[in-house]
Length: 107
Image 1 (cartoon, rainbow, N blue to C red):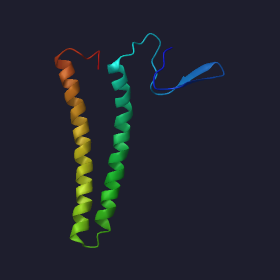
Image 2 (cartoon, rainbow, N blue to C red; image 1 turned 180 degrees about the horizontal axis):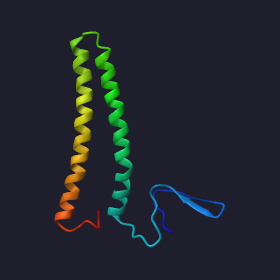
Image 3 (cartoon, rainbow, N blue to C red; image 1 turned 90 degrees about the vertical axis):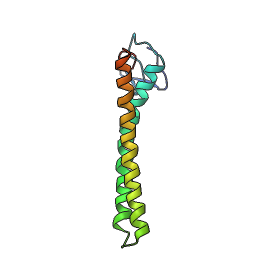
Image 4 (cartoon, rainbow, N blue to C red; image 1 turned 120 degrees about the horizontal axis):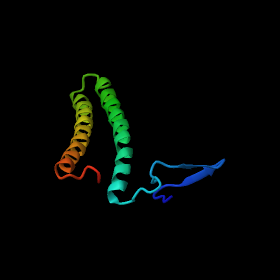
């Protein structure tokens, strides 16, 4: 078994590998690595979206009527949502282009 960007541990005769390891017979190329990284990026982006929404909401609630703090909180929440939408849209556009050009197996 080839492993890249990860470590494998053998415990009681069973091999346990990290999230970025190849299956037996699976070809390792740049598309494979990108797919594995995407599977790590989307959950991380969801956590960051939640964090920035909470942070922006906290700023908004604690503004005490200060217009600058209200705008700051709204800007944080808006930027978080727009960033997440851009991430999802870019992924969907790449998948659509891959489907159009017949590259579904590569991505």
